[in-house]
Image (cartoon, rainbow, N blue to C red):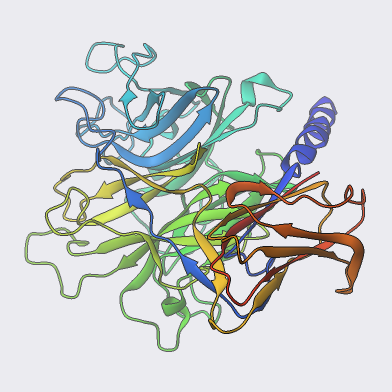
Amino acid sequence: MKRLFLFALFLLITLPLLGAEQVFFAFDDHNIAWQYNLKLTLQKAQKHPANPVLRRGPPGSPDHGHAILYGTVLKQGDTFRMWYLGMVEKEIKAGQAPGWWRPMCYAESKDGIHWTKPNLCLVDYNGSKNNNICRIEAEVFSMTRINDFLSVLHEPEDPDPAKRYKCAYIAHMPFDEVKGGRSKIGPNERRWGATIYATSADGLSWKVVGDRPANAGGERFEVSSLYRFGDFYYSTGQLLSPWTWRPDGSDIGRDMLAYRSPDFVTWSKAKARAFARPGQLANPPIKGQQMHMGAGLWNRGNVMLGLHGMWQDAAEAPPKGESWNYGVRVDLGLLVSNDGVHFREPVPGFTIIPRGKEGEWDDIAILQGHAFVNEGDKTMLWYSHWDTGSKLKNMEIGLATLRRDGFGHLSRKAPENDGHFVTSTFTAQKISLNVDGITPDAALKAQLIDHLDRPVPGFEAQITENGLHQEIRWPQPLPRGKKLALRVDFPANSKAQIFAVYLKE
């Protein structure tokens, strides 16, 4: 009873915070669905000249094998905090899960570019605790040994201080250590993609939730994300046939699935199809097109943004002696969701962060993380290089940036015509635009309309200045609690570009 009371209190506290500001991005064709003579232009992120900004450690360190952003970056106060995976290329103790151990490593930065790896003194590695490995405790040892993706969620309002940090990761556990059994869907394997959840007071010392994987008794699942949206916690990740399939039951390559939980303890056995690349669902499917490891996700309160791996199989079979995925190439694309479950590409196939050119450090394949921070006038995005040839070449962490929230903009298409858009309805006390390109002879016009598309008398305004958060100055205060929509008109000579609309109660 006490747990239910605390959780209800948690919801009452956090839900108003999630709704404090809404963002209608230019590429969100649900919230800016109604458009006349406008086009969407997505932007490629710019890679930082200092890349890779976080490198693997020296021999003997827990991230010498690689430092890879199967992980998360958050900014808390004046500090950027990064959780990433290192790699240990040998088994450490008897009973360890099969495969290489990828310890949860931790780094900090004041600018997101220059990183330090503090001695956490939590885990004994190579005879010393002077390392940056986070500690994970569990009843079953193999549940602590991360093998793949790591996602960290911070909920500072959780009434239980020991659970204000939450995480999800994959542990490849031996079958005989999995309590609760497993589904018979799919073939037997040497190991199992176990979905593990853990909580922490500080993000450094973790305790696994329960004594078995969240997917025990269900299907294998390669979890790659953790977030809360509305009433549920969600985890997305990847599977491929025979563990997943197209809606008609036919085979599919890697696609993105979602599971949910109301309390972070009990997770659904049922799953939702969250995203597959258009070519995967075509008839016939486009050969070799897959999506990789779900998506790196950013919760903006009313909308989820994400970067997903745009996997393309090699054109030819790998040479003898090379790994099975030799020649695979992966770029990163943009996703958006309005319900936290179903994701879509605003422009199918658009590459927001491309892999590097031949000879550059990130030239083979790249990986997304849950690593988005708005800092000053920039949106910062961290990502990793993946050597699909299994030589661990340059598997380190880079940074790319955009104009703040500048993933894409709306502008006029036909040069001789004016244009406009109308948003979905909302309640707000303050409306701002992320806008550029306004000139003195071509101001934008803003107008409030009601739910039946009728102008609300007394609510028209001129927008004459550019800015990342340019407030619209109305003749009078906005009516409190009334559902309204925003219409923005571009004159025929306008060169304006609108990236986002911000709504604040």
